[in-house]
Image (cartoon, rainbow, N blue to C red; front, top):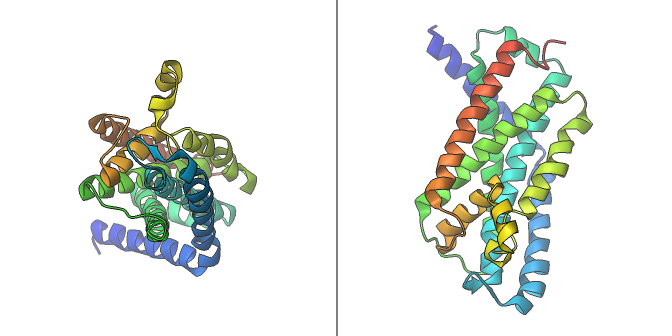
Length: 258
């Protein structure tokens, strides 16, 4: 059996395991985000949105939908990889993968693919739910697909890094609670940064989630507060750096050889 065949079998096995894992417990992985986002649609879209009217030249409900979809993709892609890889560490099954003739990049790709699958699936569910509250007309399908996949990949890599350094289950909830959630709420999900004072607009430009949300909003509605080319360049650079860092950590056995 060739090296490529070994890597392909390993990759297929990891991806299949990851997808079966979150589908087996769909009541915990798919239903809660759907309920949470429905509450956002009702409270922020219907109740508060009816008083706001328009935001960025579009109906407020339509304005927040892309941000809420992106928020669900980001949090679920991150959470899936962080919890899954840490569980493998906790059960010490990751050691079997490390001593097997499997390249670290193959292991990383398998877990990231699982995170992307869950993130995209939850995003699709939230999108279908949003159609009950508003009408969505895709402005640029290529931008929509690209930014969804790239964002899911980036945060899956972030979840992998979190899992590597985590020493207990509580550690995998620190970053989502104290970093991702604040950045998401300050990332233009519920407002246009044009409403902010000039100083805070400048500060917001350092928030990477702002670029993801606005690029996705452009793909759906055709409106954005940021430059699309800048957004895609940032996503590609972050993904490359994070991927190389993850492989370097695995090669050194950080967090796994204890």
